[in-house]
Every structure is written in structure tokens, then in C-alpha cells.
Length: 175
Image 1 (cartoon, rainbow, N blue to C red):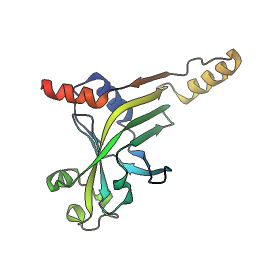
Image 2 (cartoon, one colour):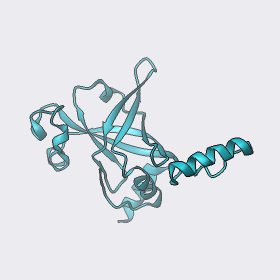
Image 3 (tube, rainbow, N blue to C red):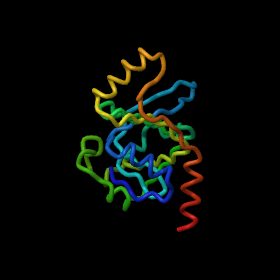
Image 4 (tube, rainbow, N blue to C red):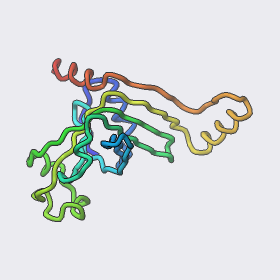
């Protein structure tokens, strides 16, 4: 993923947490109220904190972008991030060409000129994260210690960031 410098500390923290996690699970609320999730390869986190993905413009998920959740999981490093926000569609060909990768060719055989290729822009509003940056052995010891103590011990950091889209707008207004 290409990551631009973030103008707000909360967005910079989110960028740091997800930087090495190439796939997110994108969840939308379907017309019947059911949740639907699908894996998406993150292409970029722009300077306003928006995350960009290639998408097929014929996909039914595009009808359900008002409320979206992205989940990032890196169990090897004990990092878990859940982002809530909304999505938008962008068909800017220059942006598509700039983000193009050969890994997308199986889905878009005509390359960046594929007629149904577009960009899904995810605009985050809130993030919840769990980060246990220690080794697996230290985390395993923490689980055992927690079981003995009857409370979480050395289980890493949990936190939230809210108002991310507001923070990005304020940072953008200052620059």
C-alpha cells in the first residue's frame, strides 16, 4: 500500500497500524439488513486518510456504501484494526493509472483501461484497534498470565480514534 504523510496524529496512528496489512475485509449492509463482507486489496492511504481500492463498477456492493466497515488483521504481529466510515466511487482515469498494479489484471484484463474498472474510496470516521506488538511467545505468556490472574495482563494496547473524517477535513483546511 502506498501511504501518504498524514496531517493528523490519529490518522498517522491508523496508517502505522495497517501499513503492512495488504488485505482488508470490506463489510456493507445489504438491502435486507444482512452484513456482507469481501476481501479487498488496499492500494493507497491518501493524505486525508482515505483508503483506495480497485472495484468493478458493476458490483452490487456499490449500492451499499453509506455505511461501511473495514477490518484489518495481522495475527502474526497481534494487530487488529476496525474502521467504520463510508464509501464513494471515483472513475478518475489518471488516478486509476497511477494506482495500477499487475496484480489486478486477472479481474481487469484490459489493464487500467478496463471499462468496468473504478476506484472505491473509503472515508474513515472511526477506528478501534488492538495492538500487541510483542512476539507470539510473549503474547502467549500474557494469555496464560491473564488466565491465572483472572484479568488481562500484558495484552497490548486497545484504543479508539473518532472523528477521523473531521480531523482530515480540519488538517486539509490548515494546509
